[in-house]
View (cartoon, rainbow, N blue to C red):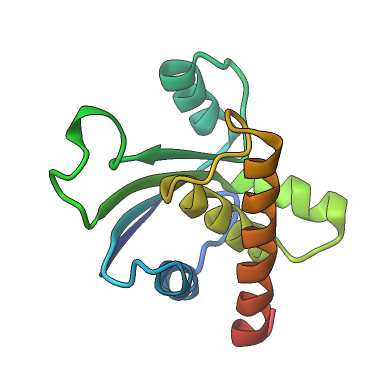
Length: 150
């Protein structure tokens, strides 16, 4: 399993080791213990630029996933899942509004992004698919809370 983490923002401290452990746990319990993943942490301006360039949405968002197991290159490198891009700035704002620790929100966004890489879709799918994703998020996040004493 190879998990690459790049922190390209300076507003919020990101502890890479715990983030990597959380990613490893999510991948393991999802049946992908040997998968490869890239995590990029940006500020709002950085994620807005990516959102505009690749998704034609000119606004910041909390998380974006780019799956490598979709389209014409499916199966070329089956262990390479893709990239998860997270706005630390947005995570901090959302955490403060929800009165939860920043790390919890960051880890939840990572979980959400990884589930998208694994084929879960709450945006383009049916209501049943959205419910399935939400249920899986709740199940895995509860496991993370127990394992990492969140």
